[in-house]
Image 1 (cartoon, rainbow, N blue to C red):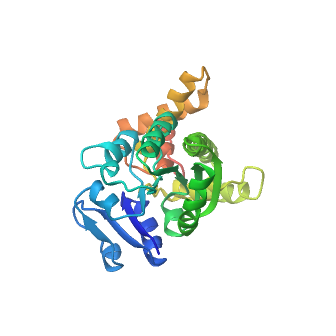
Image 2 (tube, rainbow, N blue to C red):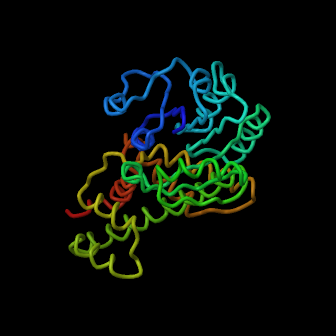
Image 3 (tube, rainbow, N blue to C red):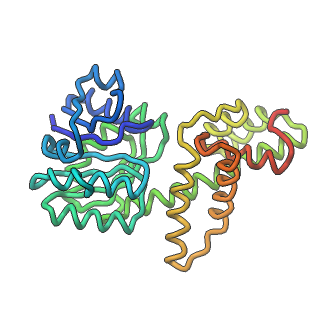
Length: 294
């Protein structure tokens, strides 16, 4: 049993923290409004700030929206680094900038801690089912310490390389996911406009080379028009910004990524920043003046 600080109880963090509690670990978190009743019933305790969480913990896990949020939690006033004890393991499971991650790792290491970047893929369903894919950037020692905890929350755990490598892998993941969602949306829109039964088209495609988890899960979302967020468009926009900023620094062209970002921006402009990212379909439907299934 470990004493774990868990900061970031959002759509992903709530079930992830729940799995750690179910495994017998003691969890503390930062007090932020009303505490989730399920987590409260499992014994998670609230403390005033990240510093207090770090003081009470052997391991601190963060999963917050963006790079500045991680920096604030770790290094802001009352931040984790102020309460860090020698040897404390800090695992950041947010999706943030790889370059900033390497700097955060240096600062935590200089303060006597061990830093691991471990962003996740799999969405809300993966978090609920403890089936996340987790991409890890760490030293061998850091990975060895983190792995038993990561295995409670995820199914596929891969040590990609040193600090920042996990975040680089996550950016690549988000490029592939965005372009595949766009491809599924375009395919279903084409089929619908041509008069085909899109449900049967999806069923057929799932048996061929076009088969993918995104066609399975998000194709169904598109047909059923269920765009409540498993992963919000605004968060995918943030990830694609990281990809495009990184591409500029590498003198690299990512035209498909840029196009997907523009379609997400069109969704946001129509009030869809908090739609599920399968809602990219709506931007394409607006361009086609046709709704899938109509």
